[in-house]
Length: 205
Length: 270
Image (tube, rainbow over all chains, first blue to last red; front, side):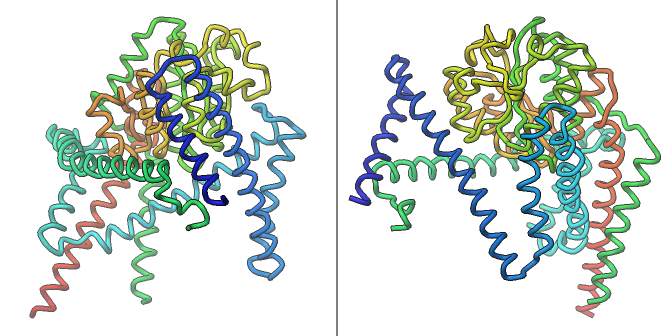
């Protein structure tokens, strides 16, 4: 029963959502809207689970004395932001908005921008023409790197055209292949879940 | 080991200097609009006054330096042409940013909240939110970002679902635009336009070629091109110099790296 009930719910919901796609009948629309509402409610609870797990994990590590100052900062962020929003609101000049814009956004952008330094270092160390395939990849990368900045037009009118060709033919054909593979894989997995063949979401059994 | 560390610091220091100096020099590079940017611009330019577009801020704060110029250019254009904007966010972090960008650009154009634009905020579970808005936007967002009941907002009274929206503009730094394309484009036949970070452009090329995506404004270069079409300089053009020199710096490093590699290989053979 522990297995059958969730599989049955999954089957009914899956089939209903599949069938409603082909119908504009009011009943089909009502079913669709109801399932959609439940979906959002369930997802909202998963956010709460995430917050609880984050808090629990950090408190446990603090108890063990691992990275205590950093974990206090992480937990204080989790508490301070909702408190600021509740006390001062979320309008444009609120403390919440200030903390978001002048603390969170610059910190995230800083961490993200570090990528540029690692890309520069990796390009020096790793991008080598070790064989023919690597040389072709390297050549294409150099052309696209130049083609994506305005200076390419100053060097030659052909640069943007060649960049466009690389992006729209060799690169896109590879990407299309991947997308078709993902699509077929998603369909197969969805069918397996709906029909109860795939049950790993039930405690991995 | 020390040599490797030293080389790394030289590379890091070089990039820092190159980017800093190029910001200080303020050299201006001319950017001719690519066909995609031109297509996006022309579409918004030709939309009749009062048309409604939905702008979705589907990005994180980390990509703000690239996203901000893109969003500002497109929002300024929309407000300049008296288009009405419904703002939403499929990413929690995009919510505060979206609200700020909308309020900032609306303020520049003298637009009024509730009459010319509205920000509905964030809804968890992107696919569900996207599909739900196809039936009723008010059902998915009973209140706007500031807590006002959506049915009390004058602009929203005539907007039930996607049928009243001319175009969806997804400003994204990841794969969220795919949800708009697959669910809204596919199920509701709604045109989708994307403003993307440069790293994401190739991901969307197949959708663009198939016509599932109407157009793309991509990266800082796309922002610079859009700003030029709009006739108002901004962060896109300012950042273009730094991006150009950083690209040239990386190309130089690749060339030097390969010269060193071939010299070492030759020396090994001898």
